[in-house]
Length: 289
Image (cartoon, rainbow, N blue to C red; front, side, top):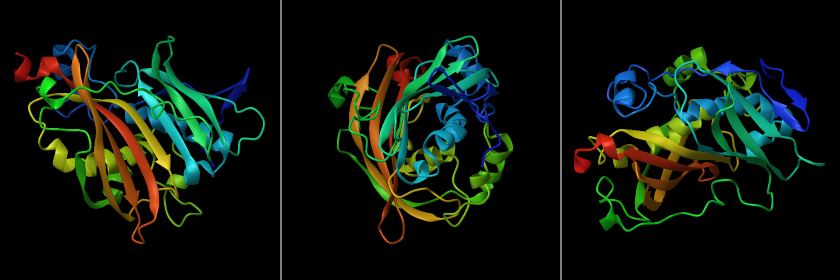
C-alpha cells in the first residue's frame, strides 16, 4: 500500500529520513517566503507544519491499518520550524497489545535531533484525550488583543461547500513526502485526500471568510489535529464545512486562536473534524510598531 517500509526498534516505528518541501516558498509576504521569514528572525522560509503530517501516512497504515482513515486522528503541536528540504523523520510509539482502540505518542525530529513536532496518534475510541484536546487553553479577553480584537470564543465559521479538487491534488502529489496508493485509488470509492490536504479543506476553505478579516500580519500554524469520524475525505467529493472559534490567547511573540472545524457529506453525515491553532506574529503587525 505504501512506497515506504518503516522500521520498528525498541517499541518505536520510524519512517525513513525525508526532505519535506516548502511548496509555498514563492508566496511573498508569508512565513514561507525567505525574505519575510528572515526579517522576522527565522532562518528562512518555513515548511508548513501540515506538510510534515504527510510523513505519518505509512506509519499510521502499518501501525493501525486502513481503519485509521475511518476512525483515527493525528494530533500535533509544532515546536520548531524547518526550512525547505531539511532532513526530517517521523516516529510513532507502538501500541501495547490490541491496537483496536489505542493512542500512542507521535513526533517529528530533524536529522540532528531537533524536535519539530510532538503529539499523539490514535484509532477508535481510546480513553485518554488527544495531545491537543488534552491541552489546557490559556484564554484571554479579546480586549487584551490587537490583531485578533474582533474575534471571540464561540464565533461561528460560516458553513460553506468545500471540495479538494484535482488541480490542487496533482501539484501536491508531485512533491508529497510519502506518496501512497490510496491517494490514487482506494476501497472508499476514490482517491483519499493526503493528510496535508485535510488542512487545505479545513483551513484554506472553511476559514476563508475569517482569514479575510485578519490582514497586514504574518501567520503560521501552531498546532493541528485531524480526526476521521466516518472518513476519509476523498478528492473531488463535496463537503459542507463549518466550525467555530474555541479560544483566544497570546505569547510574547504572537497572538493566536484555536478553532474547531467539521466536514459533513451531502447526507449530513460527519466525515472528519479538525482542531487548529493559528498564530500571528506581533513583529509583523503595525499594531505593535
